[in-house]
Length: 329
Ligand SMILES: [Zn+2]
Image 1 (spheres, rainbow, N blue to C red):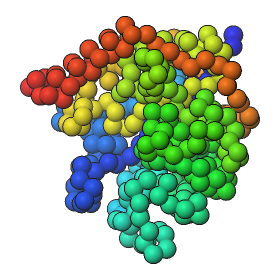
Image 2: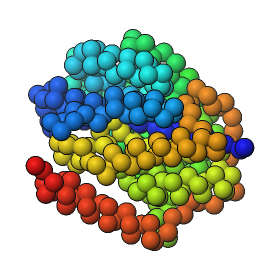
Image 3: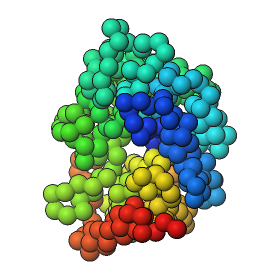
């Protein structure tokens, strides 16, 4: 049977509560964001790796390494070792927010910026090289794909990725275009080889109401939306879908406890992918031939208003019960 390739991508990063002093509570921020450690259980990287293993699925972990230049290599080594030991894939993710906190300046004149597109093509390339070296030092030396932090990429990012010898970029997300993401409209929103040479693999988005895009992201969609959009992509003959999550996504907004709604979504998604493995194949970038794939003849994925309404109810429950403190006991 024809199978649709699913790239289940998870961005793994430490996101300090206070970027004015990111080193002050680094350990706590790191344990929470990467390992999902809360007083009510751990639902981060280790847990995600275990769930994927249980269901026989492959995941792609976009690991942010620049923080290691500020705090040392040990936490990064632990992350990469866990992913490699689980036989899952490590790829490169960069957050330039870490530049001001480096022991050694990474760019000339101490250049800084909150998004990759704040930097020249050469500087972006330099940052990619630094990131790759850090990952290689930890044992991840087969990096072929890149994703810019907060989707803050532009055309120079694609050129820099090509020059760095990478085959794939996954920094495009329709929901961020024109905001953080300055990748040009000419880049096919469903994925294809770009003029820069690198193959763009955008995060798959769907219309949850007419004219409104939503990413296929675990925290942003209900399980029924994710299942329905995967079914639709399969029926329409899509070849690849890119799903998005983060190492901290199964926690509530304050990241103080697990969010049972998102935990169940992640579990349900993995269950679905395992049950339907005859039609959906989870793969890594290393299994993709870097071939031209243009999907411009395909229709956008579209959900319906009932599913959108149901998700709104779930989000309301999450914000009142999980985030709002009503569920704390
Ligand atoms: Zn990120």
